Image (cartoon, rainbow, N blue to C red):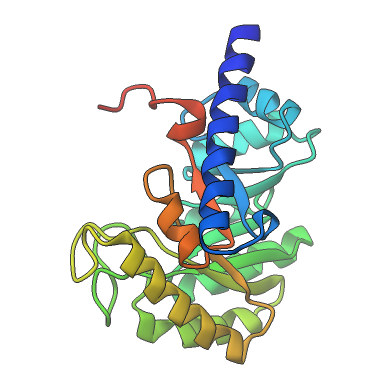
Length: 239
């Protein structure tokens, strides 16, 4: 366990250096960017070590993994983020632990999540996942709504009890006009975020960037970066 703690400490320090350098390069303050460590496939023991090392934001993308891990770590001072595609039949479980849901992409999900949050007596911050695979319509595969669908979802979140429109999330596209151009994709997200804040001023979170492209995200104004492998290592079972 001591070796694992030292490994995580070293990895966190390297990621911290990258974020700080990315902020300095564009004249941003380091405190403007929140690091979310994505702990999917890793055990609760790693979450505890991360908490000891000062991490305060962790993320999961599968409820079947997240629910027991969050329960086991419920004594820790952590903010839990749900970053995966969310099915409506999982919302009753997700509202038990998630403080922020990054993957709102359809009205039916807003309705289901609101109902579950009210029953649980919780208020959930919600990010709209924007699919930049195409400029209109739903993006394929990885979830998300096209840029033209953001305003309606934000209005629905604002009117939904137990939910708050908190901002936007995206994943660098693998196809479409922004494929292989993460910086351009994140710049486009910033434009959409600016429009969103005009209607919903409190929706100021911009979740973008992962281990491979966090610098591009910081340069484009991301407020939150979601980093997994750069902190925890190559995920088990993944090639």
